[in-house]
Image (cartoon, rainbow, N blue to C red; front, top):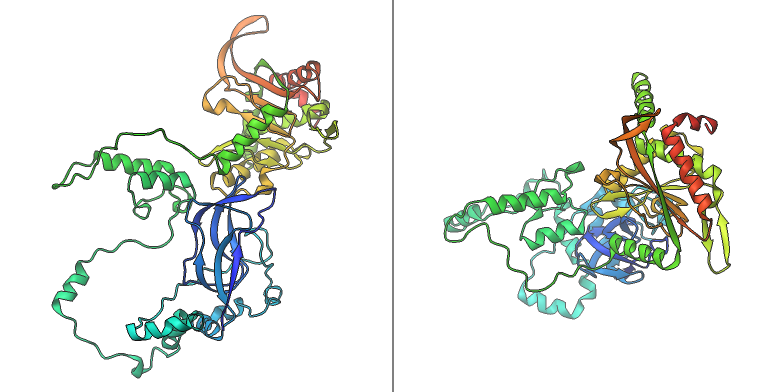
Length: 493
């Protein structure tokens, strides 16, 4: 007899207490194997796939897409352990019979690691199994089956299994053709078919936008990586629908209904985490900001020379952000007071031994801060490669919680938005953040004469508990000096 086991939302680590269901990867009636991803959830840190620790038939799912569940809440139930379900799995895919262990020790034999998040285990996730639907049941047999429901839990598997076990080449297995009435045949031909299968969407905002305008995401071609549907794709489809002329008595382009109430957007997921962290930073940290304009002409010339030399040797190009990150690590070596955190309960300032440099990145899911581990041990080229790798992971929504935590200092390049200055809010529990504005040609006194130079504004927000204004000003001045005279970095290389 099958045993129905309940799989609950596991602890996703990093202090996370809840997650939002983005997309179900299985449906009721599907056959799953151990460690197969069954649902995609979004936490305050990242988007992850959750694997199921049981192998069997999915009998129930809890929570619709977009629902938020706390850790420990039921996700789904799986019927496991029955003889019929084992035979059905073997018949549906004989090559995967060893992937569905009947005992708890089979996970170790197959090289998997049990109930862990995808990407953190030792075994590769199994491919999604096809859904096996039950055979039609007559009304008489349906009434008799109601009294023995537990015994029929594996019926959707065993019925088609008997058919698939017969070789295709056996003449007896070919049924006699049955004439189809002309009316039914014509009806079957004219019946429209809709595309099926998973939708390449990772953003709940994109799904919500499509629902608001009655768009079928399966009919939209994604322009993102691997066909990923982006918000711009949905907006293009909406514009095309609005521009389409009316045809027939029912217009295709419908005017948007007037708003009758204010729109309320839940603060959850990444947006909720950002809101809580910024509010906590303002509540707990007595911050102050200082800023300075710097002549970045020599830095841009040095970067052009480095890339010219690297391009001829086949090496990667170095970005401005990578050079600024390298300048930050050199400045933190001189002013370690800013690579620190405050233990309010112990009333202690903790100066950190390593520099784990975070950098702000704007994505479709919101603002994230990936962390470059041990940035103080890297050169500009290594930092640039890590920035490129983490930025790509952020863009595709594949950053793990570990890649978004543990930073000790943050670099915020808001110049990419075309602005000159800002007063950054410290990324709690860090002690400082360096902001960088756009680099633009401006009139500047250089060598005693007025000239047009590439000028950038630098701003430093710091926790006034860890240092005074003299230390913060010394840090910012050193950064500005390195921007104006990159040769100063030769002392620390």
